Amino acid sequence: MIQVNDLVKSFSDFRAVDQISFSVQPGEIFAFLGPNGAGKTTTIKMLTTLLKPTSGTLAIDGLDIARHPNEVRKRFGIVFQDPSLDNELTALENMEIHGVLYGVPARVRTERTEKLLKLFELWDRRDSFVKTFSGGMKRRLEIARGFLHTPKILFLDEPTLGLDPQSRNQLWSHVKHVNETEGVTVFLTTHYMDEAEKVAQRIAIIDHGKIVAQGTTAELKEQTKTDSLEGAFLALTGTTIRDESANPGADQMRQFSQMWRR
Image (cartoon, rainbow, N blue to C red; front, side, top):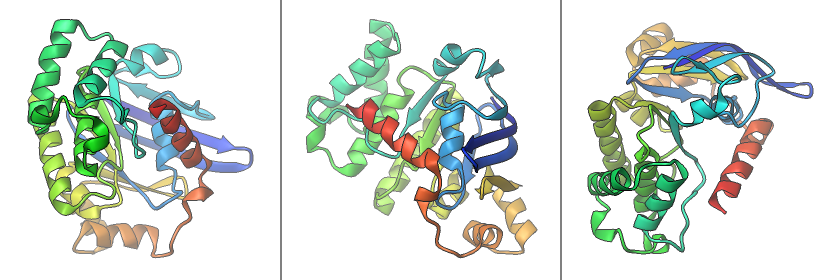
């Protein structure tokens, strides 16, 4: 579903992504992990057609991203780390606008909106303004909206940041349900190693722009002789605190998500 070969992205003399290669299989939940400033956001931005690679190739669902960007955009949904809902609209209105923008037929839009809002336990609040929602409810609505146009891939950029354990567990249960019933491929980033270990079938770890390890949780633990994904992650990337601003792609992604929200 996703094929990345020798991908490079440079900003002047800084190489944010340094010749990485990986693949994601159809229907897989794939975690892309790394410290702040490691190159995660820059990679997601290239995968979602928001940034052109310096070199290398990217393909989604067999389509070259550089040659078929519009077709590729129809095939994925994305949930940004920063909020992108319109707080002055209701949950139903946020879903409706998204469906119209993606050209979802009215009947399908109505049926799918009801199905997803019920799945994500928001149907009873469909006519409430988003500004009255808790953080967990807003996140569930954003992800429900991301599934509305029946994408083949959903990109989730730290979707559970700041949520309590109950909300995180509930959200992932819903995501896994859609992944299993509709075969949607999920590409996620997170700093919560426990949830990556729980939900992801395979994992790639990026550090200083390079992929330092790939595999299942069991394979990464075996490679590093550790007993948890967090232990493997620290063994591969070290324990030094990173500065996210070191990666220019992070600022650009934040600017884009803010523009989307407006």
